[in-house]
Length: 532
Image 1 (tube, rainbow, N blue to C red):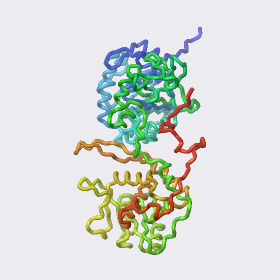
Image 2: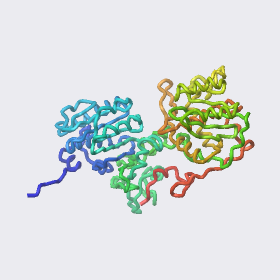
Image 3: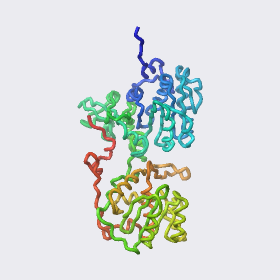
Image 4: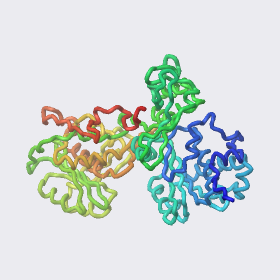
């Protein structure tokens, strides 16, 4: 007699054990049709770029129970902080277990928080804001929830916990924050599945896009082709389609617009709220690309001048901005613009420039290397200045040289100064001379900066804070140079750099792989799937 080798699928398992939500409702997919395929997806590498409150945590908890019973896999589930872990496990997972008798038989320690034994497997729940969180816990599967607000170096550290596993599964899901960071970066490297809805009138299938898929007058969803109304049943009967089906990472974009219970008036109302980043992140499930929140490659490279920098005489004002660390990154400027952008292993090139231009000054990051910049300051009294980033709440000054300008330090409002410099690049006010490939490296690092809104716990007024998703050394070197030029130039760098002093900078045309220039692209080109 032939042995039955059928493996129970997760949907068969859900039906067999009458799996319920934490509120005791049967887990069905009538109101969450877009989650059906996601439950069945066990691709080792997958991500979900999602809106808020669409059922992803329930899906993750259910799949963990299934994997523990059926495959005996060791799992680590992360959230940003330990408090988040306590709230999620205590308020969500433990309630799910309470509602499901079969889950109770699998988890004898159902009320614990930091770890649970599921059948013969272990599931660990950890925060990401301490390095020790990722230590000493082995894993076959990593589940990273709310990855955008997690500490990225700790997230990376969890990879080592799968060193001895033959599975090495990694699942990430989060509502996004800004373009190219966190879950959006993962999404860009995925097969990019979109939920396509078929119009009942023209029979064309399209994904729902704001505002094109909303009719403001009729207060309804509409077809982007013929503008006929898209009904709730049409949205419910949609299907997933991958933009890049050959890419091994499985990725889903899940906006609230595809949820059957979310009607068009709700989307319209949310679109009018003052904080647009919340609407994009939590409702549309998209990164927010508001003006001034990112520094783009094109904004930098439009400043590049394809000609030689005007000759710098011995007594001309020159400023060297240096970001210190394992390597030294420096940007050199004059009243005519920035003309050197480079890196070195030591300070010999910086010192050589101080000798070539006897009136040059150098502005060093005071924190990267605590020793050598201070020695150089002693060798060049009055010409080497250490820059301290501060938040000056008592005045409107971005740069404070203090009463004694010769004591060798300057205080700078970090976030406002980054915004100022980014705006000057955006407005094409800082000519860039020299090899184009060097400034392309600069632009690549500038792209790693992004601005987010954070609540000020003292004033209760939101602050805009610049964070980074990768190396940004050269941009800070340019910022220090800009600070030094402020000391030299009455009214500042942006005032003196106008057409009467400088030749007009030539716009650099950055050509993409498909032959287009970023200036020709739609705002959402980074997310646009093929129309099918």
